[in-house]
Length: 122
Image (cartoon, rainbow, N blue to C red; front, side):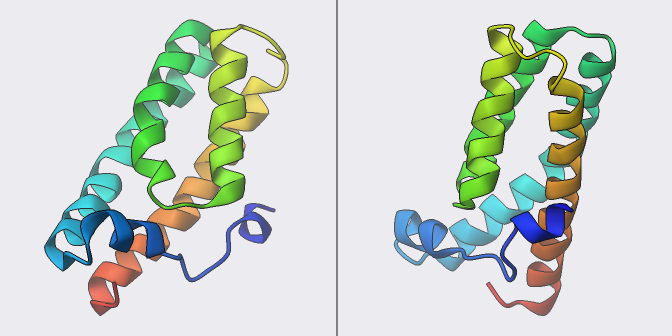
């Protein structure tokens, strides 16, 4: 299960480092991730169902920078593998499962980010 792959609570150390501890910047980055990720995931799922691997690769490339800011090792690995498989294309039989796992991981992360915002604990 994906919850085993995400260490909670999220570690925002990297965001703090690149922002020089600018809380407003961190808030804006979290809000950008929360706002844009669900739609991007919907697009990735739609293109994956259509087996449009090239578009899945492009969308993964577009999604990657914001999620990599969260510095979650297994998520980073997962994103890079999925993007690579879709762009090559290779291991196409794995891509639908990778997309489903990405959705599951991101749902956990988005819930955690929303909780951080609500609790003002970032």
